[in-house]
Image (cartoon, rainbow, N blue to C red):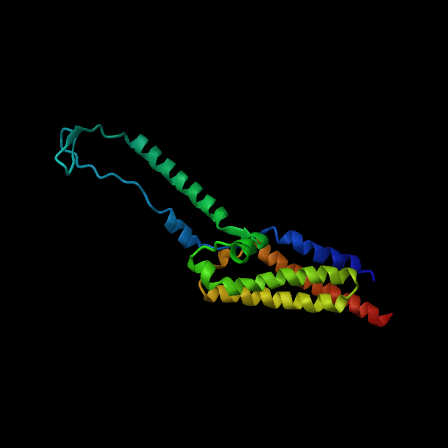
Amino acid sequence: MKYIITLRSLVSLSFLLFFLPFLRTCSEKSIENLHSEEVTAVLIVDSANKVIEGNDTIRTFKAPSKQKETKFLQQEKENRIVRINNAKREFTFNFYTLLVKTLFTDKLHKSSFFESSFYYLSGYFLVLISTIIMWISSFLNKIKTVQILSSINLILLSSSTILLYFCEALEELDQIKIGYYLIFINFILIIIFSRKILKDNQTV
């Protein structure tokens, strides 16, 4: 069985790939809307550079230079970009943390994501259980079992993601991260090498 070591390595690799960014639970548009608030001040200035406020209070105002104003706006823009990037990381989960935050926590969030997609995410939980069985089966040389379970995992990954899209937990393809695609490809490779091993066994 010249491919058995490769097969076992691929199955074991699945558990490492589960640590990679898998899904982001908030869309690009939603994250940007969360941080779209801008603090602005409307100043009514007379010819003497006095600010006239609505409460009849008058105070002297020195208008900022164009350079300072541009620098301030640039700083605000950079701060907003930093906040958005931090929010993206906050809402991006790997396979394990996604399951922990949705299936294994006592206090589920009351957002629509955690409510409407709870049962769809259970498909990912079945993928984890199936992968554990695959790993054990690969060392017991039950190659057919590994092949079947890998095919089931592909179906579970695809169907769960499609259902999440239809329940609007996933609004954009950008929310599906690199870990998802690598896990998908890994299961395909497991199927390919399982077939090679089974074919070799038939020719022996």
